[in-house]
Image (cartoon, rainbow, N blue to C red; front, side, top):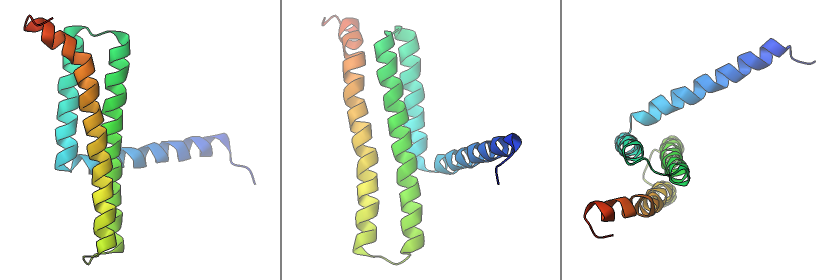
Length: 128
């Protein structure tokens, strides 16, 4: 049996609803809010400094990467808590590795930020 076209649309809209619900749940985490605040600051800096298109792309990819990694970290932590409510070395390992993924994305983003904003900052302080 095939689905009617409106059923595909309804399913798609429902999927987006679940995704936005996930964003709202991720927003409850302190780290996500900190990273989102940093993203806002960086985006404002891009606008003020009128960075080139390549830099915008790099910054936006990093913002998406960091926020996505934090959302995945939050999901993994919730799943581990459900599967293993008691303390277990493998549960700790899973949580630590998920947190490491988010941290690595953030550190790479700092490096990209140094490449993008470094020349502007050096110029502002007369060092370039």
